[in-house]
Amino acid sequence: FSIDYMLGETVAAFANESIGAESYAWDFGDGNTSTAENPSHDYGMDGTYTVQLIATNACGSDTTEQVIEVVTEPTASISADVQEGCAPLSVAFSSNSPNGTTFEWTFEGGTPESSTDANPTVLYESAGTFGVSLTVSNAAGEVTFDANDFIEVGTLPEAGFIYDYEIGETLVNFTNTSENADNYIWHFGDGISSVDIDPTHIYESDGVYLVQLIAMNECGMDTISQEIEIITPPQAMIEANIQEGCAPVTVEYQAVSGNGVTFEWTFEGGEPATSNQQNPTVLYAQTGTYGVTLVVSNAAGDTLVTASEFIVVDSLPNAAFESMVEGLELTLMNNSTGADEYFWSFGDGNVSSLESPTHIYEEAGDYTVTLLVINDCGADTLIQEVQIMPNQITPLEALQMNIYPNPTNGSFWVDITGLEGNGRLEMAIFDLAGRQLKPLLEANAILPFRERYEISDLPKGVYIIRASWQNKLIHKRLIIQ
Image (cartoon, rainbow, N blue to C red; front, top):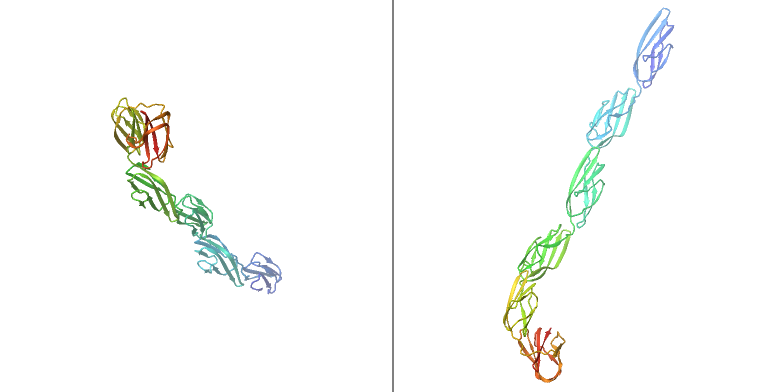
């Protein structure tokens, strides 16, 4: 027999060329048979088949065989053990072609870039999405299979960020510049975190903060850190170890400021008068009340703090007094300065702690009056001798003297009433020590009496006006302001 077969088809026609045969038995080599004289057969798939023909008649049979190769155009598809993963990614490809004889692969982004193996293995070292192309050939022809975006290769992320901050503020805007990342964790350096892509954060206080960004994807993570300095205008407060004391006073100052960089002090009445130390020490040698000024600065600005009358410098008290004697009665006018307590000794065994006491002696005589004045800084003493001598003129209660206005600026009226008649009237002005300063009148006068006086040459102070009329005596206190 002969075979009629066209490459690329699956059907073969068999022409029986046997001689003297009466029957035929065909075996097509693929498990199928026929008794037709000239059969056709569809193999259905590529392959090499042994075809057998048995020709038979009454005398016996004869057998012949031929080999037929069925070849159709190749088919192809691409598969891989993995199609996505993290670089470096190794991929085992399969051509899935049952009838291909030659294979031409092209691997975008892979190593190798091409191959003629039926099932090659390719390495991808860079991130990206890559296509694959396969051309399969055999004797019947060729077919090309293209798989676009077939392999997806990931890689580790690359973390990055920038920030926008203005000195003097506490708010910071962060911009994420990371690559190949899916998720993010921010640590702002003050215990606060965020998972936002581009977060905004407010810092509670000045300081240098280490900001950390962790960028993540399925292949892993990457971390980047940057320092950011938060500077707001300075806050300041003045403190001192003492604010009052006795001269000389040493004061240790403290500028209470959490964010100050430079300090400019001015000390009224102090030594030194200025300082740029944060915590200076200042000496006050003179009595007085003094203010302090502090200017605290940083890159965001400056703050002025003023403390008026902040330091009080005290001194030793000064004892001073005036005395007025009237009969056995001693009146003391305390003119001391800077004292808190007073202790009097009248020289007769009696004492007092009043500021300006009055004391009555039991008998005339010379007495030593002592005044002791005290404050926190110390004490001072003044001693004066006073002469106590009873008046020889008996006062008459009916005689009255009125001075007005009192206090006065130097111009005043004197009224003497209570008695009537004509007699010798004498008036004079004395200081508190009993010394006569000037006479006011020495003449006969008729009571009631009224007269205006002008005194411009006496300094401000307390004085005594004494009037006598017909051996009657009266005193009144006059205050000149």
